[in-house]
Length: 106
Image 1 (cartoon, rainbow, N blue to C red):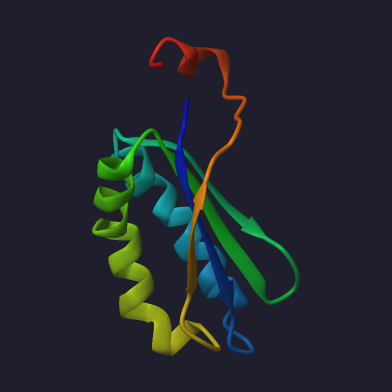
Image 2 (image 1 turned 180 degrees about the horizontal axis):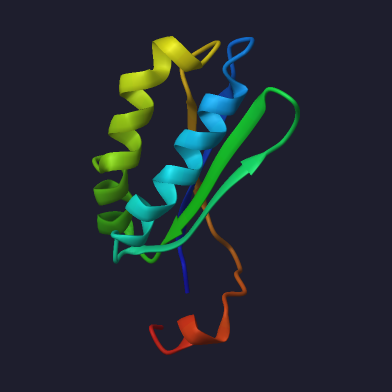
């Protein structure tokens, strides 16, 4: 079962929404290259609000993700794209339901 997760809230600067959406779509390929990232979602909450939710089986996966390409890209582009610094919230997963293909990994 996934045990740890991250919720990252992203608020766009005016007019930068399309760039953020493109960055998040590109980030999917980087998430696929992270074997310890069990699930990864980039979502749009509102016209200028986005978020990333990802979950991990343990701290090593979360730490690798926080030091990976997605985090680096968000930090590099933060001053250009975001109204404020991305808000990273570390959370504990209390229950999950993953696709059947992921059950073999547990």
